[in-house]
Length: 184
Image 1 (cartoon, rainbow, N blue to C red):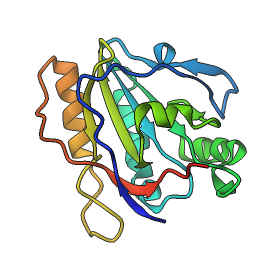
Image 2 (image 1 turned 135 degrees about the vertical axis):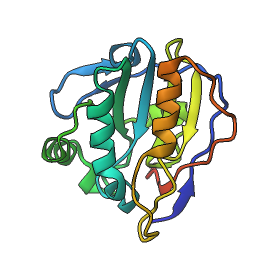
Image 3 (image 1 turned 90 degrees about the vertical axis):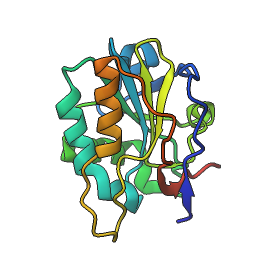
Protein backbone atom coordinates (compact mmCIF):
# COMPACT_ATOMS: atom_id res chain seq x y z
CA UNK A 1 0.00 0.00 0.00
CA UNK A 2 1.34 3.42 -0.95
CA UNK A 3 -0.35 6.34 0.80
CA UNK A 4 -1.46 8.57 -2.04
CA UNK A 5 -3.30 11.91 -2.12
CA UNK A 6 -6.01 12.71 -4.65
CA UNK A 7 -4.87 14.73 -7.67
CA UNK A 8 -7.38 17.53 -7.06
CA UNK A 9 -8.82 17.72 -10.58
CA UNK A 10 -9.60 21.33 -11.55
CA UNK A 11 -12.88 22.69 -10.24
CA UNK A 12 -15.33 23.34 -13.07
CA UNK A 13 -14.19 20.27 -15.01
CA UNK A 14 -17.07 18.62 -16.87
CA UNK A 15 -17.81 15.10 -15.58
CA UNK A 16 -16.27 12.49 -17.89
CA UNK A 17 -18.91 10.11 -19.22
CA UNK A 18 -18.67 6.37 -18.78
CA UNK A 19 -20.54 3.15 -19.39
CA UNK A 20 -19.69 0.60 -16.71
CA UNK A 21 -21.28 -2.58 -15.37
CA UNK A 22 -22.81 -2.63 -11.91
CA UNK A 23 -21.41 -5.68 -10.14
CA UNK A 24 -24.68 -6.32 -8.28
CA UNK A 25 -27.33 -5.99 -11.01
CA UNK A 26 -25.14 -6.62 -14.06
CA UNK A 27 -26.71 -3.55 -15.66
CA UNK A 28 -24.49 -1.00 -17.44
CA UNK A 29 -24.67 2.57 -16.15
CA UNK A 30 -23.59 5.82 -17.79
CA UNK A 31 -22.89 9.06 -15.95
CA UNK A 32 -26.31 10.38 -17.03
CA UNK A 33 -28.03 7.32 -15.55
CA UNK A 34 -26.46 7.78 -12.11
CA UNK A 35 -26.68 11.59 -12.12
CA UNK A 36 -29.06 13.37 -9.80
CA UNK A 37 -31.07 16.46 -10.73
CA UNK A 38 -29.05 18.64 -8.33
CA UNK A 39 -25.69 16.87 -8.38
CA UNK A 40 -23.72 13.67 -8.62
CA UNK A 41 -21.14 12.04 -6.39
CA UNK A 42 -18.66 9.69 -8.04
CA UNK A 43 -16.54 7.73 -5.54
CA UNK A 44 -13.51 5.66 -6.45
CA UNK A 45 -13.26 2.88 -3.87
CA UNK A 46 -12.23 -0.76 -3.63
CA UNK A 47 -12.74 -3.70 -1.31
CA UNK A 48 -9.31 -4.19 0.24
CA UNK A 49 -7.95 -0.70 1.02
CA UNK A 50 -7.87 0.00 4.79
CA UNK A 51 -8.79 3.63 4.11
CA UNK A 52 -11.99 2.54 2.37
CA UNK A 53 -12.71 -0.12 5.01
CA UNK A 54 -12.34 2.65 7.60
CA UNK A 55 -15.09 4.78 5.96
CA UNK A 56 -17.42 2.13 4.53
CA UNK A 57 -20.17 2.63 7.12
CA UNK A 58 -20.18 6.36 6.34
CA UNK A 59 -20.42 5.62 2.60
CA UNK A 60 -23.51 3.53 3.31
CA UNK A 61 -24.90 6.35 5.47
CA UNK A 62 -24.27 8.89 2.68
CA UNK A 63 -26.11 6.67 0.24
CA UNK A 64 -29.06 6.34 2.57
CA UNK A 65 -29.13 9.98 3.67
CA UNK A 66 -28.95 11.48 0.17
CA UNK A 67 -30.86 8.82 -1.81
CA UNK A 68 -33.94 10.98 -2.26
CA UNK A 69 -32.32 14.41 -2.03
CA UNK A 70 -31.46 14.93 -5.70
CA UNK A 71 -27.81 13.87 -5.63
CA UNK A 72 -27.03 10.70 -7.55
CA UNK A 73 -24.26 8.49 -6.22
CA UNK A 74 -22.10 5.79 -7.80
CA UNK A 75 -18.97 3.98 -6.61
CA UNK A 76 -16.34 2.74 -9.03
CA UNK A 77 -13.50 0.27 -8.53
CA UNK A 78 -10.68 0.53 -11.07
CA UNK A 79 -8.06 -1.68 -9.43
CA UNK A 80 -6.20 -4.34 -11.39
CA UNK A 81 -7.80 -7.58 -10.23
CA UNK A 82 -4.85 -9.67 -11.38
CA UNK A 83 -2.68 -8.11 -8.69
CA UNK A 84 -5.58 -7.56 -6.24
CA UNK A 85 -8.13 -10.38 -6.60
CA UNK A 86 -10.08 -9.13 -3.56
CA UNK A 87 -11.28 -6.32 -5.83
CA UNK A 88 -12.70 -8.63 -8.53
CA UNK A 89 -16.32 -8.05 -9.62
CA UNK A 90 -17.71 -11.09 -7.75
CA UNK A 91 -16.05 -9.83 -4.55
CA UNK A 92 -17.36 -6.31 -5.24
CA UNK A 93 -20.87 -7.72 -5.48
CA UNK A 94 -20.46 -9.56 -2.16
CA UNK A 95 -19.19 -6.40 -0.50
CA UNK A 96 -21.97 -4.19 -1.88
CA UNK A 97 -24.61 -6.65 -0.72
CA UNK A 98 -23.12 -7.31 2.71
CA UNK A 99 -22.63 -3.60 3.48
CA UNK A 100 -25.95 -2.54 1.97
CA UNK A 101 -24.78 -0.12 -0.72
CA UNK A 102 -27.85 1.65 -2.13
CA UNK A 103 -25.82 3.00 -5.06
CA UNK A 104 -24.30 1.13 -8.01
CA UNK A 105 -20.83 -0.34 -7.45
CA UNK A 106 -19.31 -0.19 -10.93
CA UNK A 107 -16.31 -2.04 -12.31
CA UNK A 108 -13.82 -0.12 -14.47
CA UNK A 109 -11.92 -3.04 -15.99
CA UNK A 110 -10.13 -0.93 -18.62
CA UNK A 111 -9.18 1.68 -15.98
CA UNK A 112 -10.08 4.34 -18.57
CA UNK A 113 -12.64 5.95 -16.27
CA UNK A 114 -10.15 6.32 -13.42
CA UNK A 115 -7.74 7.93 -15.86
CA UNK A 116 -10.43 10.28 -17.23
CA UNK A 117 -11.27 11.44 -13.69
CA UNK A 118 -7.57 11.51 -12.74
CA UNK A 119 -8.51 9.37 -9.75
CA UNK A 120 -5.40 8.52 -7.78
CA UNK A 121 -6.44 6.84 -4.55
CA UNK A 122 -9.16 4.96 -2.75
CA UNK A 123 -11.27 6.58 -1.57
CA UNK A 124 -11.34 9.49 -4.01
CA UNK A 125 -14.47 11.67 -4.17
CA UNK A 126 -15.74 13.83 -7.04
CA UNK A 127 -18.91 15.92 -6.54
CA UNK A 128 -20.52 17.54 -9.55
CA UNK A 129 -23.36 20.05 -9.65
CA UNK A 130 -26.56 19.64 -11.67
CA UNK A 131 -24.71 20.83 -14.79
CA UNK A 132 -22.07 18.10 -14.36
CA UNK A 133 -19.38 20.64 -13.38
CA UNK A 134 -16.92 19.61 -10.65
CA UNK A 135 -17.54 21.58 -7.46
CA UNK A 136 -15.78 19.41 -4.88
CA UNK A 137 -12.94 16.92 -4.90
CA UNK A 138 -11.21 15.80 -1.81
CA UNK A 139 -11.65 14.06 1.47
CA UNK A 140 -14.64 12.63 3.26
CA UNK A 141 -13.51 14.12 6.58
CA UNK A 142 -10.34 14.36 8.65
CA UNK A 143 -10.48 10.80 10.01
CA UNK A 144 -7.94 8.20 8.92
CA UNK A 145 -7.26 4.69 10.19
CA UNK A 146 -5.60 4.93 13.59
CA UNK A 147 -6.19 8.69 13.97
CA UNK A 148 -8.75 8.25 16.74
CA UNK A 149 -10.98 10.80 15.00
CA UNK A 150 -14.55 9.69 14.32
CA UNK A 151 -15.69 9.11 10.75
CA UNK A 152 -18.39 11.74 10.21
CA UNK A 153 -18.25 12.54 6.51
CA UNK A 154 -18.30 16.21 7.54
CA UNK A 155 -16.33 17.69 4.62
CA UNK A 156 -18.18 15.80 1.91
CA UNK A 157 -21.57 16.23 3.59
CA UNK A 158 -21.01 20.00 3.80
CA UNK A 159 -20.21 20.05 0.08
CA UNK A 160 -23.27 17.96 -0.77
CA UNK A 161 -25.51 20.16 1.39
CA UNK A 162 -24.14 23.29 -0.32
CA UNK A 163 -24.91 21.77 -3.74
CA UNK A 164 -28.44 20.96 -2.61
CA UNK A 165 -28.90 24.52 -1.29
CA UNK A 166 -27.48 26.05 -4.49
CA UNK A 167 -24.66 27.70 -2.53
CA UNK A 168 -21.10 28.11 -3.84
CA UNK A 169 -18.35 25.97 -2.36
CA UNK A 170 -14.99 27.21 -1.16
CA UNK A 171 -11.99 26.45 -3.35
CA UNK A 172 -10.09 25.54 -0.16
CA UNK A 173 -10.54 21.77 -0.32
CA UNK A 174 -8.30 19.14 1.24
CA UNK A 175 -7.22 16.10 -0.81
CA UNK A 176 -8.41 12.64 0.03
CA UNK A 177 -5.71 10.19 1.09
CA UNK A 178 -5.66 6.45 0.66
CA UNK A 179 -4.20 3.51 -1.19
CA UNK A 180 -3.05 4.22 -4.71
CA UNK A 181 -5.28 2.89 -7.48
CA UNK A 182 -3.66 -0.29 -8.73
CA UNK A 183 -3.06 0.52 -12.40
CA UNK A 184 -1.68 -2.14 -14.71
